Image (tube, rainbow, N blue to C red; front, side, top):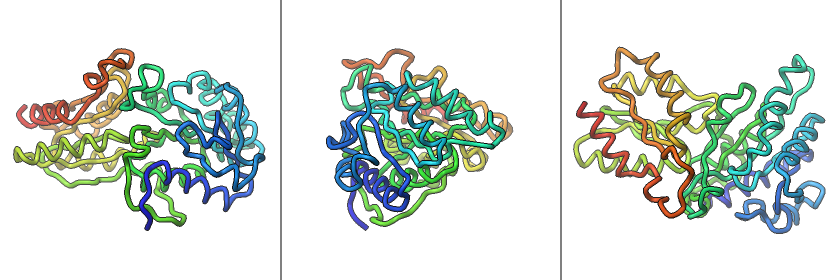
Length: 325
């Protein structure tokens, strides 16, 4: 296996998918010769030509609408929204068209070959217009899958699975890990099953659940807790829609406690949906209230980014409170 960062892994996934599927196109703002603002699509236009990897105008609604049109005609489409903060102009196309295309035709036609890639989250001093985590907005939309990788290996396998899934997928990439997450990644083709969480650390006292860049935070908090004699089970949800209720519930029945961590604001965040479901599934097993360690209910603050982030120390303090309840 090769050493890759997350950007290289994503680029490798796109390249493999384009090599194996002659109908696949990649487009978005500056994705062509420039290779995208983060260089995730570097070299694709040189290899596959301008007809298969090309720039679009600065219109997210247009990007999504064009993607729907190509996908509805049987093409495989990967459309990049340059920052997740700017996915909202495309919201109508994604939620009202992409998600409902198959349903409104009675399965006569679909846009199943459609994937929207977009970098999300903070940690890069990007301020309130380049740091948001809008994943929860899409989890309430039947017909969409929502996927978030935590490292380079996961990014490649999950992206290849997303591109080949028969449903439209919104693929959120944690941008602060683009170059920070480096690890061994197979150079060849592989997929990681969508809709399946991964238990990345066994434990017996409390379950820690997250996704994307926050998994690194959870692992650090688990190390701090271990030094205090607290055994943490750590789970990466990976797919938020549909999410793996069974794996999480099985873990909580064992540990009796659950802490959910995400970077998005607390109110309306996906942690609330998880908490509601798990208390229904595991009510008689719970030893303490389900805890949420999340971003603040405020626009993302540039100068107070550190205070905003649900970091390892905040998570560690919440772990201790849960266990001591």
